[in-house]
Image (cartoon, rainbow, N blue to C red; front, side):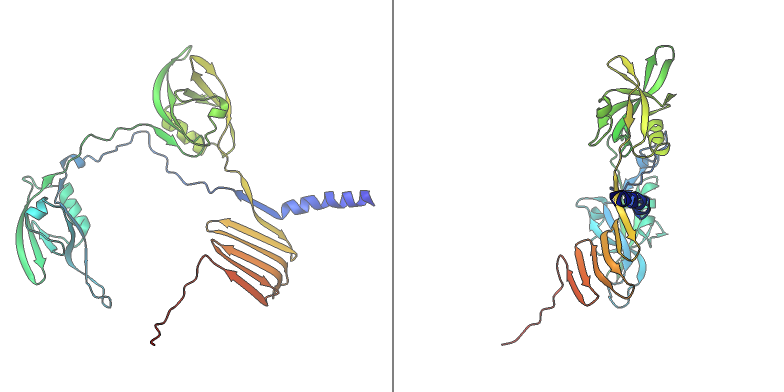
Length: 319
């Protein structure tokens, strides 16, 4: 009898496994891989000017007949800025600038990005029912120090930041390498003995072209949890440690045993459902949870729901 029970259980295991589905325990974010050469500042930024105002579409104030009217409405005026010195106020509508119709904030942005030669502008402005002309001298936009690249980041596979450097390797000469400049939480590098300032030369024996090449290959050629061999130069020693890329783990997302038992869960949105003896028209027991809202149903007759809060309507009662 014990033997028959064991055989039945062994035969049941594959069937149970086929009824269970898995998904990552943590949703992996989608990242856009950067190009090798990145321009951090647009070429037009050096010559851009500033009018000292914030504008938006000139929408009508009626709640029953919302439409976009000509011009752009001034929403904010910088104190002592060019627009303030020209006499503009919040609520004014700019109809034209140097003869150009301004019906969208992007038009104003384009005028500031491609400034006039003398930075002088003539504005046609409406204030209530009065249309007037204002002269404005735009201020040169302060750019400060240009952005400086610090490193290339891999937020998923190795959870670290790298910078491209050249290093002299015996028998190979000068080669590109990725220096580890930042290590984030849950990075697999420390477990493999790779620390900050280490130089990564190759992945699975294939040498790198740059730090971005390392990031690209880790996120394109491998899956989470894959084992990858790195060629590392650290403390003047060349080693070949194997690391297991960051793995979000797995969680059960679905269990289905015919009409007897059904379980499903999702991470986005956070939800789960459990049904016991589903007879199509009704179930012996059904539980559902979406975010903070929970509901229980027994035989479709007894229903209990709970939530984080409820909307209530209060009425004023006169004494």
